[in-house]
Amino acid sequence: MAKATNALTQGLSGKVTGLVFRQNANGTVSVGDAPRPTSKAPTAGMLAHRQRFQQAAFYGRAVQQDPAQKAAYETGVDANTQSAYIVAVADYLNAPNIQSVDFSAYRGTVGDAIVVQATDDFAVHHVHVRIQRPDGTVVEEGDATADADGYTFRYAATVKNTTFAGNKVIVSAYDNPGNETTQQKTL
Image (cartoon, rainbow, N blue to C red; front, side, top):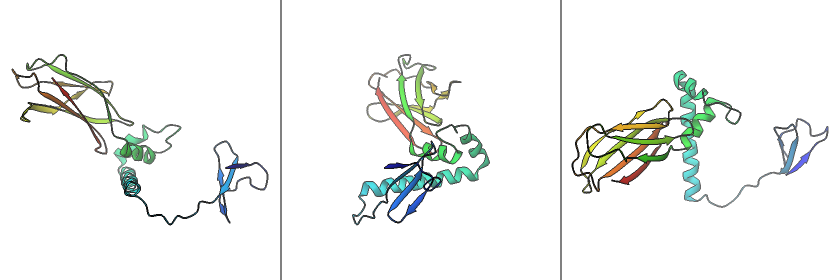
């Protein structure tokens, strides 16, 4: 795309005949050919992406209508995301990440800790821990408690588990829009 820096194009933006003029952040104007419509049918992946983005936009608008949620998302506004709506849309599109699961202190005794570190582009809503036997029966499950740092979560065992070797620890992290990331480890 060419840059136009003359008095004729200053402040110009939009489509003019077959050209598109764009205002850049540094005050310059870029000009290029207008996009041409395509006759190709969108792929299933494209349609799924469009639908997901549409759902994210719906979520962003819903956040704008709820003063408490809007105020919460406004705390995430910075130079790159200039409104609570943009922060909410980005949050909807990005699932949380589970950085680590530390079950080295778990020995099957009540009170043993499982420590999870999880992050999100905005905030992790909650972390759920489930311990299950190899046959799939659940030993115990529940939500972990968040530390003050906001990304460390601790789960304290509530059930004595004498045969914990081979059990699975399944950790799920959720963000405000309900995105889920799951990680599984074997004891």
